[in-house]
Length: 343
Image (cartoon, rainbow, N blue to C red; front, side, top):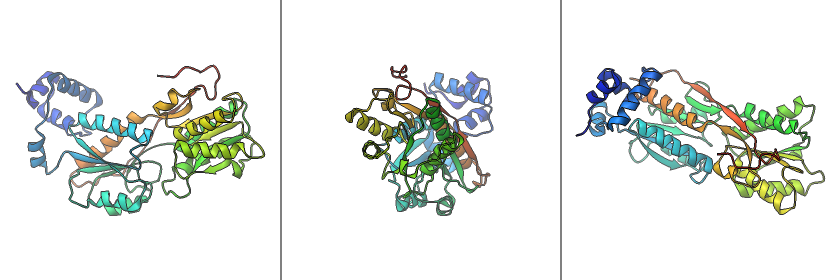
């Protein structure tokens, strides 16, 4: 027999209203109570009547996720976590790919083809914060990424400057002094690459090293091919770097491939640090040192921001600007002793 909302309330020892608040993602429930209610929901296998709830509330129970690249391991993992977290709220996630195109981002925000989403989480590469919020108008929107929303929209992001500084400082602590950066993207408007470059420059200057412009390599994309090509360019230069900070793990893995092909020993002759902590890097040879953002927390906080805005009577809550933790995971590309993949 199908469990009811009252059954869940009785099991958790709370009111039916509290259970409803948890199911609807309301922020007006303590973490402890939310956990107790969620455990009761899981134990009883409770599933809300989405059709009836949507009819009463004028909502669909569907939220959108717009990411630049579906094939990117980082965005694929993040999308999976967002779907998992949304399922706990009995939401369905529609995923679309923008490829960093302004018109594609605008189309999703305006709901061309019919408004079916209650809200949208988007990682914008082309539109600025004002463009996003002006275009979205009444649609609840949460931004993923580093472009400042200037108080106009909710944003969930990692502190890229601090993370890049930490990665570069780690290389300096290993005795590296000729540290190159791969991943500048002047053609994009999101600011992520420039923030990582700023963290790299800041750490070098603090160590008394002047950043060399010829070691700041721009790329068309953050893929393995681009990293391999950039690494080849560095190795063909008059002075070869002894370390590389790559702005994505895919770039780092491409650089590692080229180093192997050229007979460069990693990490003895060349240390490499990536960014994102994708699974591939844990099983490369040697395994990849990387900046690891808390991707699950990104998913959780983004969905909570979206829920707060969806269930706000007039979608008029003050904008939130949330910084998510990161950590540096040291593996074999900078530490010869760290040879085994980290699970």
